[in-house]
Image (cartoon, rainbow over all chains, first blue to last red; front, side):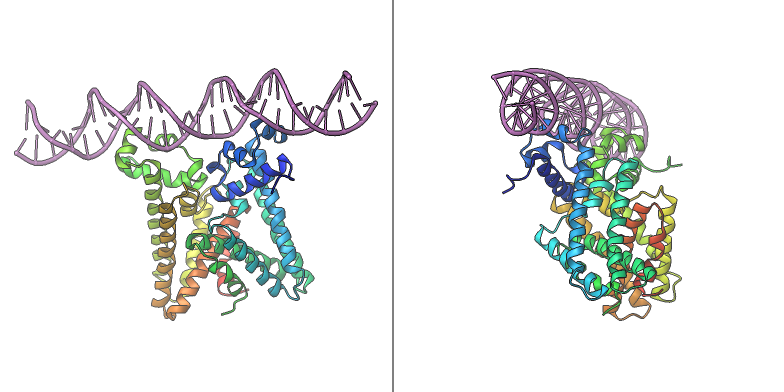
Length: 186
Length: 186
DNA sequence: GCAGCTCTGGACCAATCGGTCTAGTCCTGC
DNA sequence: GCAGGACTAGACCGATTGGTCCAGAGCTGC
């Protein structure tokens, strides 16, 4: 149960999940409140700017989760290719565990949000953090810096694109083929 | 000028553009009406189910435009690689001509829409049409059927992912590097 | 010239939107 | 035991949402 979580944590978690399912504008504040079992006062206490603040917090929370998945995937890896492949499979499994309709937590939450620079900058920064985390593992595993940068960007692009196709097809197959795509196998 | 266009066409065009910019739920019916210079009655005359019908029509209109771009890119091509590269550059140019913030017309319009099966099926079908159009050119240009299918899917995934990254970075560089990823250059 | 359509124009509606405000509860330090 | 901040609870708000409805404009065939 989530009773142990604070109201703030529940708000962020539920907001992240709901935004991922239906996008920023597709989810009303009331629904997030209901899912979190919190009254309106709590939301505006923890997030003075309301929905927008909550969305940024939700995206950052989701981003932290993704970074952890990257660490878990690369920790036991003996090569960049191996780590990246594990990462793709982990995300495919995550996708399978959902109802096959989750979007990218960052795009869904921030790209579709109010068109202000704050959201745009925040999303760009989260994406770059993601790519840099993978690139760092590439360098650690012996790749030259420029190749690590190129490869990690390719992994990101492959995952982002394949995630969309997996969503349309309601199955994780495209995600599982990302390593072939990135490393020119098959 | 767009005076020559019918009310219906103006509605579909403007809806497609606005949805692409801010997603299905991010755009109100009133705004589409205002952009099209049409009253409410016209919308519900041409699209009895209102916003949802309009969104499907807008996605199909955008899809037709994309298919035309594919034809234009592959028509003079002498190899799949050449056609696909031209396609990527054409889309990069298109992205540059916008304010660097357009989303994929299909995802923005249908993925973020109401979570019903109609939207999901429609988006899946449009994506498959897209991939099949590219694959057909692959076969025409001498690729074995299975390789054409794999390659065209890779192009689609690369473009979809790179488009997202281009959006975050506010520049079309990632799109222009898609051919390198797909064909293992560089 | 009028019957019968397609289409337009816009008033109107209930529901929902995100957000404000304040009274009250709870916990903690003293 | 009480002072005071952190937090909850929910009534309330104006604006906007998507949608309905109907009167009438404009065109076409007769």
